[in-house]
Length: 429
Image 1 (cartoon, rainbow, N blue to C red):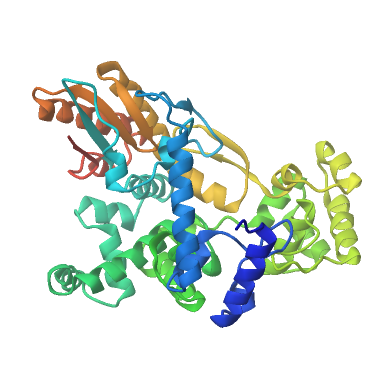
Image 2 (tube, helix red, strand yellow):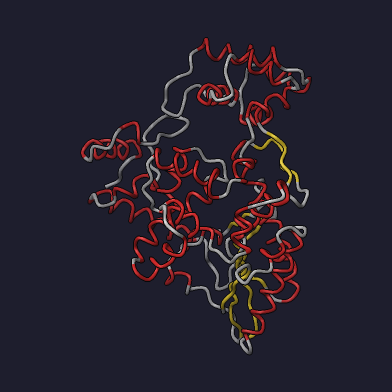
């Protein structure tokens, strides 16, 4: 029988009590503060009969929704060449979010007399991050790892596990489950920390994306180890203080920000509350309302501090919005290619410099490959091209060389050895 959303939430609340899941650990919706229906959180409890069946049904619904968008033998999805992140987006159907099941992907076949070449970049975002750090600071431990042919995820894993790198790599043959466990944890840390994630967010990100159980304390310790011991240049990379952004955007000295807001530079909670009020939110992520006194104080402080005439009316109106939040707390970010992203928040600023750079290089590669072969799909840093069935390996090599050459252009001469390394481009037929 049909179950309403509200009935489902009540059922999930009952199950959470049955499984003794702490209420404060269950995410809630931003607008209503109700218990989340997101499968990422409930996935770790799928051993429960109802949750297992419900999650399985959700996967089938996603698959069905994708299939329903395919009504012809040949599909022609729509691509948008540029979104805020610098990447592309795809729709009708969204091939960039296609189900990963191998049996499903085999439904897509090349035209007669042709084969698919599927080519992507190896660890391209980390390579771009290394290039950015080397360009900014003149040195990068991450770049050195690539130059030496060291797998950065395995190196990070060995450091997190307090093991010698060679000894850790030996686990790949002697204890593969332990090797995989630490390497997945390292991937979460390597990708999450440079993107600006805090300890709590990193813990949630590791569980949702890599199935890694990481306590907040572990996340905090491992983040600190990554930026101080493993790749110390990341500590400098992440030193983008929100207070400095406010000072720039309001055109006021930093000392005034600290004095008027009556906080020190580490008062994360109150800064977050101020951001939420400016965004138009009336309650925190746990659903606790911000007091009228606090909200009035926020607007009064910002009006007093502001020296930017273009922000005056917006601040005096006391009507919060996401756009206003970006104008007050965001910053302008440039990639090495000179592409600008304005009003970027902290995590967006961290991500754009390497993720956006990787997107720039991948698009240049896409443009050049399109001149040579029909491209049937483009998924961020992966190109699927259709090549003649005779001598497909020859065409694969041409595509690889083209992709490497174009990414080399984007990195502007920095970390050349990274760009031309054996693993930068990889393709298979």
